[in-house]
Image (cartoon, rainbow, N blue to C red):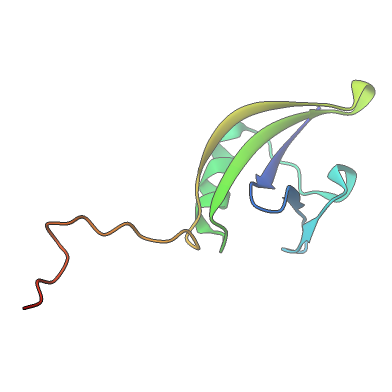
Length: 84
């Protein structure tokens, strides 16, 4: 079993080289969910999912999700500049 970071937009996994790959076997493996979430938050990616990959059955189990630093920032209406 492996814990991986999945890019929600491309369905690719973060590799050890910092690139994205479609191959879960080439993806960087993390020791725990919390470690993977912290790394994913620093990546230039929008939404991500932390998945548990089970090689023996080729199954994926979603563990967590979030937004990386590449995610667009939401501006609240109160903070938006007023024109006019």
